[in-house]
Amino acid sequence: MSIELRPREALTLWHDVMLSLVRGGDYDLSARQMTILLTIYLDTPPHTVRGLASKLGVTKPVVTRALDTMGKLQLLSRRRDEVDRRNVIVQRTVKGALAVEHLADMVVAKAKEVR
Image (cartoon, rainbow, N blue to C red):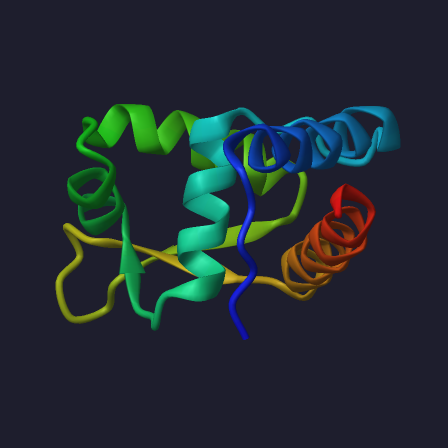
């Protein structure tokens, strides 16, 4: 199913979802943090710090700082790769999965309001 939005409607949807996230008080993630979170939950694992940095076009320390924040919120976890100890594997958590599911529900609800 495809939804066609005009540019203003698309921006209104984005605004309304972001506003709900800010007002909700649960997680006030930056655009970078949200992109990393959604990548981890939408793309097939495994996910590494190196791979996320490459995908986003940023350095590993930038990804690490974002992961530190999201780790404190228990939205994801990290562990060393047992095969290659240089790699850090980023893993999904139940709390993170519920947050992403809630976000998806919010986007669907707000999209209905835009039209």
